[in-house]
Figure 1 (cartoon, protein in one colour):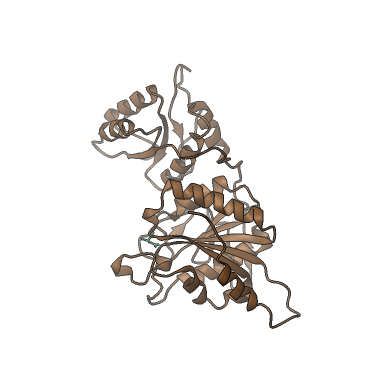
Figure 2: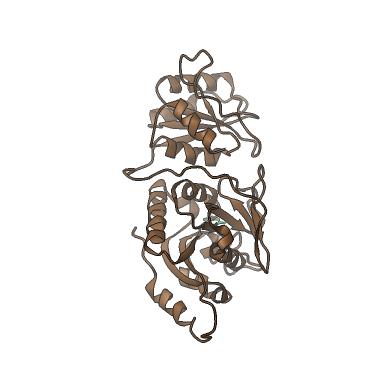
Amino acid sequence: MRLRFHSTLALTLLGAASPLPAQRPRPHVHLVATGGTIASTNYYSGQSGKIGVEALLEAVPALDTVATITAQQFANVASTSITPAMWLALSRGIADTLRAHPDLAGVVVTHGTDTLEETAYFLDLTVADPRPVVVTGAMRPSDGVGIDGPANLLAAVRIAASPASRGRGTMVVLNDEIMAARDATKLNTVRPDAFAAPYRGDLGVADPERVVFHREPHRAPTFDLAGVSELPRVDVVYAYVGADGAAVDAFVAAGAKGLVVAGAGRGGTPSAMRQAIDRAMANGVVVVDGSRVGSGSVPVGEGVSRRGSGPAMVGTGDLNVQHARVLLMLALTKTTDAREVARMFAEHQ
Ligand code: ASP
């Protein structure tokens, strides 16, 4: 899964830049396409990956006025087929591309919306370059009515090209709304305004005439992937009335090194489930307690029991369960000590 410049396309688009010699050179933006509904032709067939990256670009002629674009087809799959191994390759590929091309203003990634927030946060936590990575997708297929893909792609390229985007990490952009990757989540299964940052709010907006930022994102040190050949297994367990320890025990038996609890309210779990969590922690599994509510916070804590005698659950802070899982996977590449994981979660609040 090597990342390569799509040289034919790059040449085509660079060639198209020449007619007005007095024009200022346009910023260089690199597009990485991974699939999703933005690259699908028929929503009801449920098939992502019908449209290649060249067709994605051809559908938005206005891109040519915004940036010189190079592009690559990283994958063309539904976002539920994205794997942790692909995250490693995608992040490393983007970092390599940025390093090899100092002229690049930023990178745009197109992605299925179902797991977009997970991939975006992984990139946010692992790409150290100050140039922006902007992740976008679409809720409607490319041959639908009132489609959102072209508008989202144009907005994403404008944001990636904007000098104001530097130092803001990975951002999620749909419906002209700019969200920090750590804050963005999908809240609706069908509508074009499906994404929001319910707890902290948007970073800004891609207005028709300019890209505007209203606030700074939270920034924390990124994780170095050097020497990481695979990500540790981390599973999510859901709390509900009558939930017992079966899922916890099964995930631990399957080799989970970490668990994230989608707890009731501010991280609550029924007692049978809680007993299984305590057994898991006693066996060295790091458990992070979060909420199934969708907005709000669970205190991070110290990762150590009140008497200081053993590990305790680490709270997610205001990260949602999907984001907390990504952070825990990366934290476990560095440590298995719950206190150290708590320190990292605190750092990312
Ligand atoms: N099933 C699609 C995906 O995530 C949904 C979308 O892109 O909106 O790949």
